[in-house]
Each structure stands twice: as structure tokens, then as C-alpha cells.
Image (cartoon, rainbow, N blue to C red; front, side):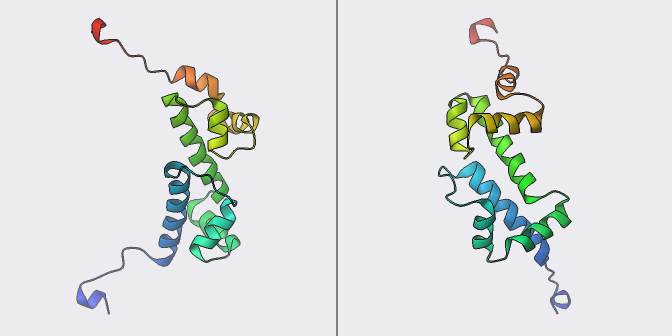
Length: 134
């Protein structure tokens, strides 16, 4: 009926759910100051009014990665950003990102990037010339 009127659906239901899952995770990790008081599975279930196991199966079947892996990759990207701007200590970053310890953050960071947070920080220092040297 929509097509006969010149309209079409831009997103099917599955794509909309996947987009909502990603959006909630990105918003929470990159744009929210307060850490979650519940785990991500509860958070997503409550926000989307769906059972987490069905969300997880759907996400994995479409994205070829688990929700947990997506969360981890988003957290590591946020940690990289925080390390790059050098405004927080690693301990503060671990607390901000809701890691149980600096060791847990460091282990996950190394597993994802192949580098320790400190070696990443050293490597990522911008090589810039001061204005008087230009």
C-alpha cells in the first residue's frame, strides 16, 4: 500500500532494533558521564523492552559479532580517546569506564589493540612543531 503511494520503509524491524542497540551502547559509552548502575544486558532489555537473549541472538546473526564484543570495542575506542587527550590518569579512566581495576582495563586494552595503554599513549603523542619552529 505504501509503495503504491510512492513511499517505502527505510528500515525494517530488524535493522531498527540493531540500530537502537548500537545507539544505546554508543550513547552510554561515549556521551554519558555517569556509569551504568546495572549491566548492559539489563540496560538494553529495559530500554528496548525485549529479552536480552533474543536481542543478543539477533545482533550476532546480523553483525557477526556479539553485543559484548561490540561493547568492548566501543569502550576501548573511548579509552583511546581519553588516553590521547591525557586529561585523566589510567586509574581515573578505569573508574570512568566502569572497569573493576586498572589491570582489567590494561589486559582488555592489550587484547584489543596489541599495545599496553602506556605504550599506546607514547605512540599517540602528536608530533607537532611549536609555532616558533614553523
